[in-house]
Length: 250
Length: 265
Image (cartoon, rainbow over all chains, first blue to last red):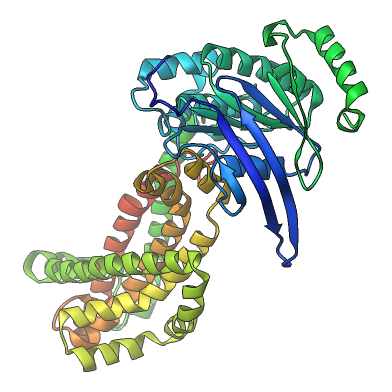
């Protein structure tokens, strides 16, 4: 799956958002993000964890280049390929699963590559189907495959496992790790789920409520593959002592 | 991991079979009613289906019926294409640009409610009794209709899919083809359907008022001769063409473009 990318694209990404203001429908301005600074290391999984409604989605939209009304700089080259997994699958209902993926594939991504990717996320049989025939869990797998099919320089995941039952969510988290480890990619995932954050993160960024800024950055050194429930519990207990405000809510 | 089964082939088969069958029975019922009414009336002013069908046959073989129908059909097609194109472009623009919408909205309301006859007369007075004026007048009657429908379509576009297209850097053409147009498909279908029926009606008036041929002209001629058989003959031939277009063109296209839906429309 390796390919040659222009130099610099996969180097570290620097995100500096001085201020991002939301103007609501009735005209009141609300500061969503203030003095947010983060360095994302290449090939790492950075997890942003914060309470619901703290502006995580806003942050991700800014990083993805979907919202440029903010003060600051997002050091992501415009030629960088982005894979984005939204909270909802956001597949095109009038295109088959295969067509949905083909629409965004990276140049040189062959039909065999697509089959292999579909197989690895467990949707090989679903390729000729339309998204409305799929369950939410399956549609999420398709969205995951689509995000990887772009061979992204930066993979953004916005609470990708929200509103799934815990077993399905857990299976998908392990699946994400498998696919991600097979295709090393710089990734940023946002979540409000502490155990999910601890399972996935190389670098765990704790966020404060509105206006969002970074409270602390923790590096988890245990390889993801070795994080069984016991290890996660231990790390969680440790964090709970040191950041009660961030972990007690969960 | 539940997957809803694709529709059963045999169920689909019965559906496509029984649809035309029911329609044919319904048409046969109408012919029967007509026949009985004509038998009871025994009047020159209400010829039976036999006489009218005979007229159609005679006019098709020895007369101008096919040519006249062809001319009318051409006018329908031309004004439909012009009206759908302009109406869609203006409607989409108005749906996405609130400023433009405010500017054009009063025009739209006037055009929507202006009687077709006014537009037709003015078109003939100002541009002469020619083909372009005729087609333009018909199109102008239909355009506001398409604008209103497509404007709603543009307003209903899913911002989530738009974000997806932007995040994945789809080219403008690819976004139009894969994201925007499929969302507008139901609105195109609605505008085409209501537009086609409107155009069928107005084209005949335009022909009656200022063209030397076409079904409308023939109807006018036979009205002056009080030839009800000819009037019904032309009407029936016209209806047959209309139904053929509906069942052989419009509905198959709709079925094809909505095949991704779970339930048949």
